[in-house]
Image 1 (cartoon, helix red, strand yellow):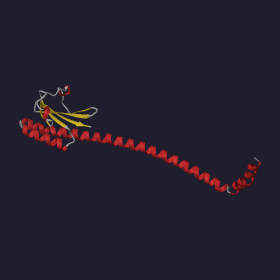
Image 2 (image 1 turned 30 degrees about the horizontal axis):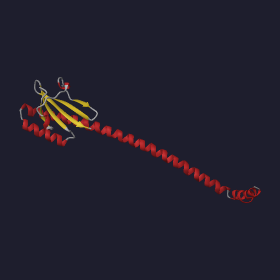
Image 3 (image 1 turned 180 degrees about the vertical axis):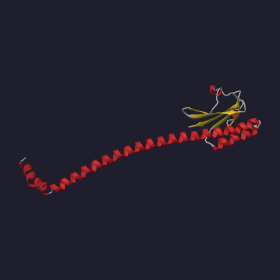
Image 4 (image 1 turned 90 degrees about the horizontal axis):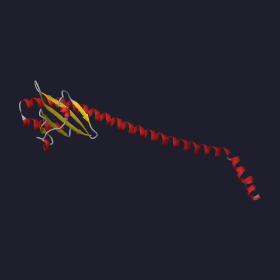
Length: 173
């Protein structure tokens, strides 16, 4: 025990006194490094959260803008459909629907007559069937319906005195 005390008195304390400044500076460096490491880690996590938030916001705005553009395109497309329906030109309607689906990001396009029958569709399996949706009865302007996995754009096709039908554009998200 006495030998242990003499070691501390003879060797350790004099070493500490001689190198006190170096020891303090080493402790300051270790503390500063630790503090900045924690700070950088916090900043990275905040930046990652901000990045995810901005990406989500951008995707939402992009989807909204795409839907607005498709709504406008379907409104203009309904005018072309109207002129072909007045001429009773079904073959040209098929070509128009095919090109519209290819050029836009629409997944399904249906043209429904005033009796709720699907007369033209990009999905040929549903042509000739009845379209069951209550929204078509009093439709006078373009309406966008949103679902969890898809958006549906309903655009009326108006004749001179009556409604000729409805253009239904379905876009999957």
